[in-house]
Every structure is written in C-alpha cells, then in structure tokens.
Image (cartoon, rainbow, N blue to C red; front, top):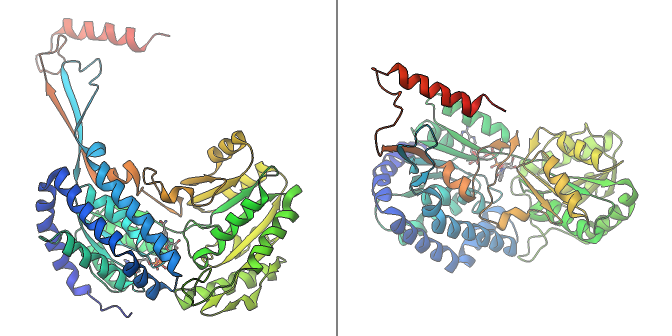
Length: 473
Ligand code: NDP
C-alpha cells in the first residue's frame, strides 16, 4: 500500500497529543491500565485481521504474523499491569547524613513520545516502545515504515475505538520526510527503531531541539556452538534464527561460530535443514518474500563478496537470490573481513565458521560494531554463564534463539551500532519517564550544616564523624 504522506499533519498530531497527554496522565494508574487492557483485548480478539494486514504489507506467512501479534500483546499486557508497581512513588533510604529527611522517588510521564518504526516486525517492534510509553502515562504519535502504513493506521483506529476521547495514540503515515518532521516537532522523546544509518540521521535531527532519543538499530548477531552442544537443537535454532522471516530479523542469527571438533557435523545438519526449506507466497510457507526489493540486492552483494574472498556456499549461492524471494544460503569458511560477516545482511543467509575454542568464538562474536543479541549452545550451565557474561550484546539466549522476545520483564536494546536505551520491562517503562526526587524534613538535624550561621562546633563534630566513617580501614 502506498503511504499517503501526512508530513504536513505532523505538527497538528503532536499538538493534539500534547492536549491529550494531560487527560491521559490524569486518568491515573487504574484508568490507564483499564484503557490499555481494552485496547489489548481488541488486538487479541482481531488477531486474524491484524495478521492479514501484516501479511499483505510484508509478505510474511500467516503463522509468523500471528506469532508477532501474540508477542506484542504479551508485552502490552505486561506494561499495562506493571506500570504502577514500577513507576509509582516509593520511599528510599535517606542515609546517615540526612536521617532527618524522608526521601522518595517517583516516575512522571515525559509528555508526548514520537515513535518511528521499521517494516520487518511492524507490530511487535514499534509496540515495544508504544505500549511502554503509553503505560508510563505519555501520549504517542507513531510514524510507521512507508512499507507498512496500513498496519500503523489499523493500530491507531483500534485504539480510537477502544479508548474514545482525546488523541492519546495517533499514527501519521509517510516516508522518511514524515519521520524527520516528527523529529522536529517538539516531542519530549523520540523512540526510533530501524537501521543504524537512519538512527544517526534521527539523532542529529533531534539534537537541534535537544530531544532525547532511544535508538534500536541493526544487528549482526552471533550464535556459538560448543563441542558439548545438542547439535540437532543448535542447527534447528540456527535455521529458524537465520532463515525465519526471510532473515529480516534485527536479532536474528547472521553468524555461527562452531568449535572445530563439531564443525562438520553441525554444518551437515544445518545444510540439510536449509535444503528442505523454501520460501513462498502461500500462507503456510516456511518464510515469505523479501519485503523490499532493495534488500534482495544487499543480500546478493554479501553472498558475492563472501565467495569472491574464498568463502564456500554449502547451500545456495548467487542463484538463491531470485527476487522477490531468496532461498536459504549457508556460507562456510568466510573471511572475517567480508561483508557477510561485518555488515547486517538482513536476508536468509548464515555464515558458519569454525573456531579453535570458545575463547576464539567470543572474540570473533564480539569483533563487531553491532551488539544486539547473541546465542550460545552448550551442555554446560557454567560454560553458558561464562559466555553470556563475556558476550558484548544486549541479550543472550542459551540453548535457544530469541529467548528474550517473549519475556516482557526483560529489557531489550543494543550496544555500539545496535543503539542505546532500553524498551520492554521495568527499564522500558522508566525509559519513557522522568524520575522526580522529593525529600521531606521530618525534624531538625542534630548536626545541621545546611545553614549560613553554621556553628564551628557542629562542623568539628561532623568532621570527626566523617573521618570515623570514611577514613578508616
Ligand atoms: P530504516 O532505517 O530504513 O527506517 C526506519 C524508520 O525510519 C522508517 O519508518 C523510515 O521511514 C524512517 N526514516 C527514514 N528516514 C528518516 C529520517 N531522515 N528521519 C526520520 N525517520 C526516517 O529501517 P528499516 O525500516 O529498513 O528497518 C530495518 C532495520 O531496522 C534493520 O537495520 C533492522 O536491524 C532494524 N531493526 C531493529 C530492531 C531493534 O529493536 N533493534 C527491530 C527491528 C528492526 P520509511 O520507511 O518511510 O523510509
């Protein structure tokens, strides 16, 4: 569906959101929870309709679209139910120096949040910001990808039906220029999900008005297979994480590092799964078309570069790219400086390289400018914990891929070129809030230093206590 460009409508949408933000904040925890759960019930009740809309715009199979909605709704439910517990004002210890104060911290909404979303998971990904921003008491203006405007409009229409009243959640459709207008529109925070390059542009635009940003950007995620791993499970996970959604998953599997002693058996298993997998138009295909024609060209370039530098195509090769589809591609022994290892491919291709040991696996996994997620397959809990601690990534899944996606209590976000800030979980709620500290003096301090006529004796006593407390031991 071609987007109707609503760039001119952005300032009015943000103004309407600002007017609605006070009403929304005023509903309080219970009122917002009721409203969010009403919206949730609408989305869940019309899951088939939403999945059809996702499928029409992205080309993904029906089951994948349904799963995406399920995951998004799980997060929406969590955000609605946990906002109060995470964000309400709570007492904190005042400490020895301020024992006469009662101290508390509370989290207030920022006001209006601009959300810019990508096309690959047009519901799950933006709702990771939208649900948490709304639950924290903000109004939201959402700019969906130009490839998925219908999904964005559908979500906003269902909101208006479920939560009639001021414009707490709106969608404005259009291309990059509409997104740029949202950056300039004076929102209180901008949550961007998309490529690293656009993330930089968004951040630069937001700098002009000192608008804070959350950047959820690309990834080049690694999966590590230890010699003691269940190789069948690891191969199944690599196939799902690499080829599922045509590889168009920010936290999907793009690189696999396998301990040399199990390299060939692992490669055989993955190759067998790849050969048995074909994309298609059918609703029950294993995966669908590339959503954008430009992406197929990038995938072809990465395959060509890997082979030109001496990598092997164990399954597929340049002929696998037959737009709009790309068949599964398994590349082996690919030099670490080739595009298929260093750049986000975002296609159904997996690079599988052998490593001497797990130290080398971690070293290579971490030698990326991206750091979104990583996976580890091992039979040892101790090894898993050790690798999870050493991997430079926002999330690590052990003996699974994308294990975090269905755990709403876990924060999600990247390191390095994968971005910064966190959506999901308690951290995701706080990301869209402003902490406010309050102290209340309960009685006059026995040693009061916060006065102009400070007594020398008080300062001497305080200094003695200070030395006792901090200068010993
Ligand atoms: P893009 O960066 O191309 O676009 C993302 C969004 O930004 C779109 O809505 C786009 O609009 C908009 N946009 C484009 N130019 C501007 C601009 N100058 N100012 C403001 N907004 C602008 O990403 P894709 O849509 O191609 O999504 C794929 C990328 O998203 C991949 O890199 C993937 O890894 C990443 N991603 C990251 C996730 C995460 O959580 N870390 C999750 C999902 C995806 P338009 O579409 O109209 O151009």
